Amino acid sequence: MAPARVLYVEGNYDGTVGGSYFSLLFLLEQDSTLTVKDIQRECQAKLEAFMVPKYVDIVPDLPKTTTGKIKKTDLK
Image (cartoon, rainbow, N blue to C red; front, side, top):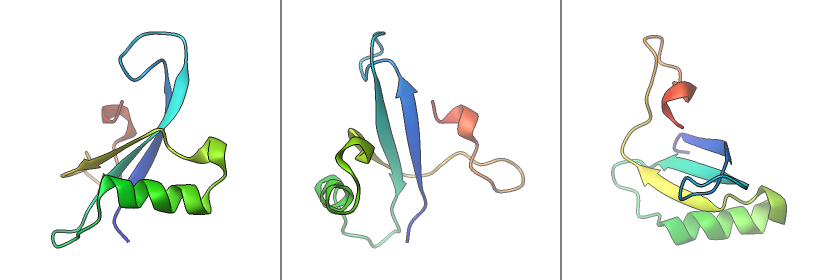
């Protein structure tokens, strides 16, 4: 399983104020063939509707601290 991080974001995806949503940042392994649609389908099949991330982004790397933990402050 590849590392992933779910963010709860206050405001809209375009930066305007007035809503909130879940966003999923997903780090794929080098030879993975997963697509954003595959990840969304899997989330819809296994999660309640309100828990399904509105946006899924596949990222090359997640920021980490010097101890190797995911640096949450750099994700927003």
